[in-house]
Length: 69
Image 1 (cartoon, helix red, strand yellow):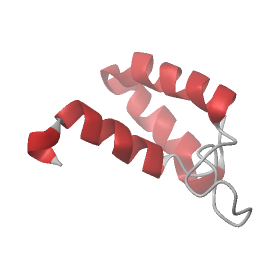
Image 2: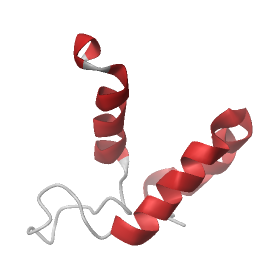
Image 3: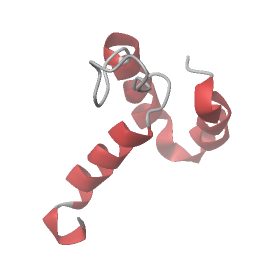
């Protein structure tokens, strides 16, 4: 489980709010693809495992659809 950027603390805090299935799926995705990320060719850029915020922004935009982007 990721411990950078406070992700672990936030995950445990919100897991009891009906989000556990999503968080479990996100964790499985990060386990498999967490070494990827935006600009992944640049070693200085954080990976999704280190900072899932960019990934979550893409997911939110997809869920909300074009009217909310």
